[in-house]
Length: 450
Image 1 (tube, rainbow, N blue to C red):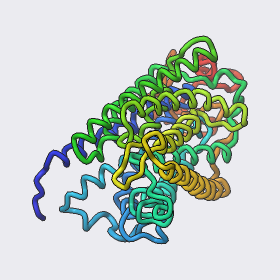
Image 2: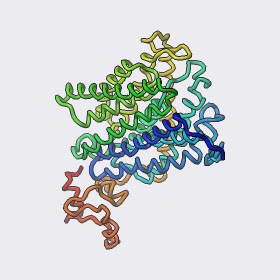
Image 3: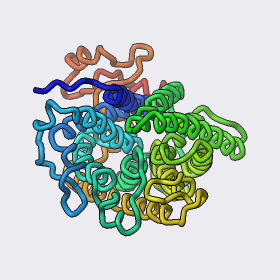
Image 4: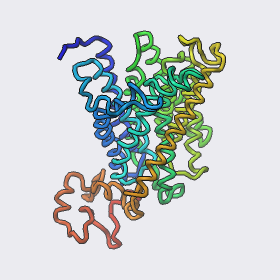
């Protein structure tokens, strides 16, 4: 095996890959704090298990599907290098690892739409199938020489779709998939009327947003070609979420008379999502405008689920889909002049960049929606997507994992669960939880059913 000397570019990408991997545990805190207490571990587990499942898929066949010789300009050959055997001993392994972290967090983002009611077993099947059939083909179409790239049929006709770090591939695909799953699962019991659905741990949400913002500098900056580009990306990744946070706070204050911590954290994420596709293609003023617009629109969009009647539990649609569309489309307005002569309308462009961006958004949404719907319908008709009404009321932490996140007055299981289960009556198995006379978990009442 030849020895390859590490250079600054290798080290940069390795550090960025570690930052992006940290984002998924950060997402676990962000989502975990937004759920009810009796569903927080399940929510966090969905992010963590995505790391394990996607990590295996990516190494075995997923990476192969994102490049190389394509099939109908849609997807690469999954059998081209099973297990990455041919890549061993090459510097390509660094880029392969970096790419894996994107696939991981993309599918983890979807989990926020199914909080409180999805079967964990169904999620564990959904993750590898969705990454294989949706994420990898979209990555090929946009970044791997496929349909939307410069060499693809649509890219050749309209111009290449511009997506530096994942507006199309990551956020729009995840947001679209989240909407489909939310519709397939249906509403949570008490959706829109039960105050117990409010977030149970806002400090967790703030911690998650902090970790996401920190990791996002690697998310956007890992593929920078030189120091000039890396510097622009860094500043834009600071400016856009800062502007989005302020935009969300202003909108929230005008609507309800006060800013909230949850809104502040959500505004940061909205700005991060919006700048993702545009981070290397706009100047800092453009980044500020993109961030401000995304903050305002997402603050308004998260309330649409109540008006339209779909239960996107943790606002994946309102944040990732809406902000992903904003950031992707607004490149057509604020994009700096590019090597192929295209530019945003406000920077001397003729409108073709805007057209290419809009078409790419439509293609990504339709593809993700159709394939996700098929996957969801197959799972729903076989193993089922949703837990029973009893398990939902009891809490998916208990019903899916036989654990609870908190121990109050000795009623939480924590690490003592194994002992509790071993002594439980097998005919009256309550997961080691003390029940009251009505057969209800005492801790549920203590936590105000959150």
